[in-house]
Length: 135
Image 1 (cartoon, rainbow, N blue to C red):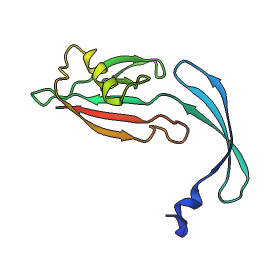
Image 2: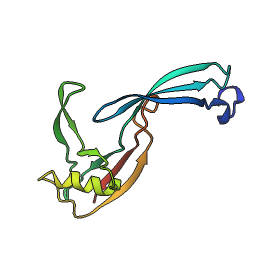
Image 3: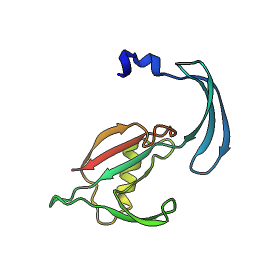
Image 4: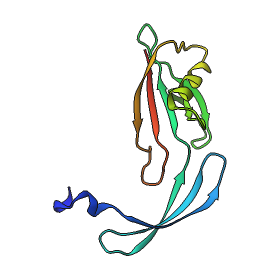
């Protein structure tokens, strides 16, 4: 804690929020927040997107399964755990199971949830991530 400050002393009050742009995968909101230190109003861009799920599949011989995917952001092929967006109306577990079923090398017969995490980049994202491990 910085110089004995309390957590509540760090919270910026949301004064105004509006949606600026809407895209297929996310929307951009403009938040105006009051500084807890000075009261000055500052503007922030926030990405709002659906939650996501990542699965860490472990085979019966204790090997982790990763998938290769082209990623448009990096413009490269990425080696990563299978996963995707949590579909509207589904739990993270339901969407995770669907992601596992798309991978022919994975048998999703037994698995458990490790739970959720804060946004990957909480400085400007609102989505939460959920991780599961195949048993």
